[in-house]
Length: 383
Figure 1 (cartoon, rainbow, N blue to C red):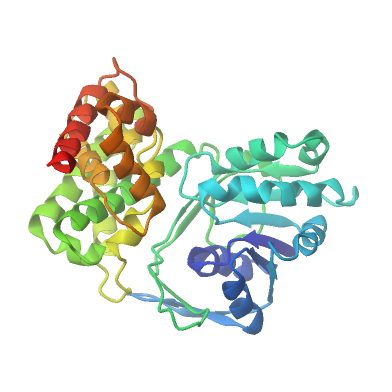
Figure 2: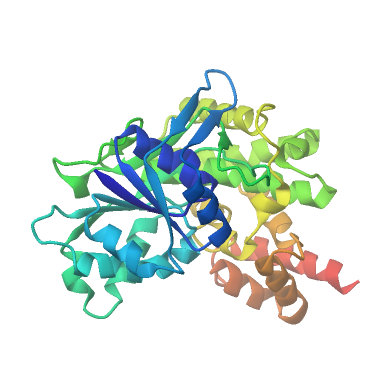
């Protein structure tokens, strides 16, 4: 069995590649980062170190690496005969890998079973987005007949790694990889430790609107006080309380929307906070966690998504709104999205910023609260 994985970074090696290896797949890592690909290519193996109680070290072997920018034909050739294609490239990069997948499907031998495609990104409906990107390509309907597409939800903390050129990865012991089962019928991929469910929506929203929302909240408030990393930010009692309050409000929304048991969600939140504070993991810089604020403030992402749903249910959102305000204040000159956001705040009206960034429109019950946060940030920038 063979799997082609786009994205040879830390989550690609530390979660997706690890599970594929355990499932018996030969792995072909594809990435546009030349130095990274050369490091992976030259390594005969790498080790995934699980830091924390119950953690184990696993040596991953049986992989190859291709620079997909330098040799796209080689990538296409691998996809032609692959069993599985996965991604961990970030939601905004899915359109870039779509043509390669489409090309591989176009020349895939008809005798092979459908290619099993899963986009493993921190976003709702990421595989749907990838499928649409393929469908938008000329003549893509033929290619779509040669594949099945399943949405997924992934969860594992993989902080920044030492910049020493090694391809080993330090991760937390906990992970979840939840996959919708229906697209595969009676032939799901062999992914030990992954879970297959009939309805993915409750699981992916629980993860995105609790883990990612809480992580982002710690980063954005941490950045305001100059904290270097998420763990340091959570040592501040006021930030710890803010993160707890935000996750409690997202849990109330998830319980109302999907019927999650409130006590189960409370246990889930407590475990997440323990994971964020794991002293054996490498520190996760707030600037890394907070990067790309324009994406993270979009309509169905980790802040606006749960806040909008909660307020529509008539639930409290004050903690979420404060976190949204902290995200609008995220100012990192090394992050292009942060710089673009701050430029928008300086040059546009508050209502224009809210509509453009969050997708909310005047009349939505969350609009006025977010507008006030934007206006507050603009007042700071104008001083």
